[in-house]
Length: 307
View (cartoon, helix red, strand yellow):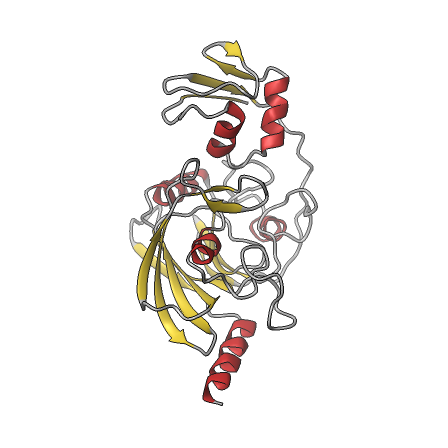
């Protein structure tokens, strides 16, 4: 697969760093391998990893076609919030991976969708991610939209790009937020050392905006609603941690030890998703109820405040 574009924000970065910023789906080690093998051309010439990118450089990547494993359809008890001939809205449970990847080729949402929808899934994202236009983390619960055809996929993808989709998440964060409403506007990019993490990155990050509203204060925690204006990887988790209020249960961006035993990952729920329907043009909003573990935890925190 050939990808070609003109660099607009080269900023004199090493090309391996620049490509890692621009192509989040590809690891830096893989990009360095492409560079070493001559798979990256700048202005028609192969370059090495230490080449400094300038604005106006014409960059061409020759990415070998991946040999993708055959993904099997699996019967699953999917929690379907809405379905028609264009889209299907799923309430994703905790612990479910959205699409197959290394180490997760079975038991994913895609495996279940392939059984439920048969051949009615968009093909734009390839065989590993049919119908998937956006994703939420494995331990994040809540509403996710899947597209059944390429027309619907293109429409929803454009709405995501224009930030016109309504996305409200519910989270429990460490500490007491002083202001009931606020906005975090800070660019997010790959962590400079730990490539599996994201971080606030003023130089290489992409614009990211999260609005938050306090729902309830507890003794040591705060229950908040976060509305995304952009949709970067781990956006809410990184943004809340950046202001000193990481998500409860998030051992990647928060405390290594969770104060509540048995809590699996971050307390984050995608509660509301609003879109313009790709065929009718009508605005539609979908809600996923809080999962049982989240409701139980809120009750426990509330009781602790009363004591």
